[in-house]
Image (cartoon, rainbow, N blue to C red; front, side, top):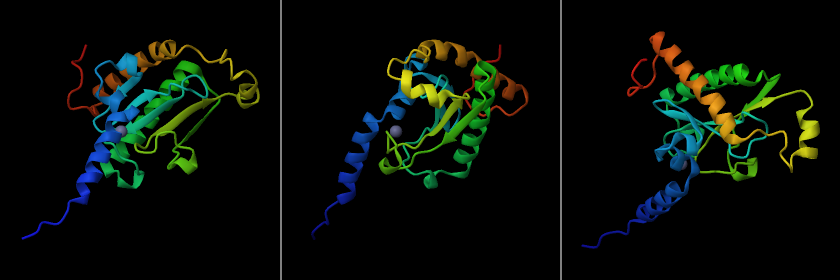
Length: 180
Ligand SMILES: [Zn+2]
């Protein structure tokens, strides 16, 4: 009896290789949230700062699973993504008082995705005139605050939001931090 070849095995190896290189999977599995700029962890998604921000506070929400296509996400994954988007908008309003937001996904390299294997929702705070002066001074990034300063500003606000949701009985984390 001859066994057929196992082409899915090659796919598995390719996938696991890309997963170990994936910046989102690395940030999620690393133990140092501050170094990885992870702002919040839900049960199915997490929030992290973009290390090459368009504006201060530019963050991303990504699923814990290494998923390329948003249509593969389950209902609970999609619902929590929306909840974390709401939290992110609240936090960014408190921290930066932006005049608007851009939020969306770049799916596929053609659409401008830098990381194609792990979908992520961008949340970009906007101010009137930022797109006018950004190209001029963007190279020096003088208007971009230090990433760690952004992290130190936003992390306590996300923690506060998580406690607030916990008090409201909507705690979404099974392994949430003990109440203080
Ligand atoms: Zn990944």
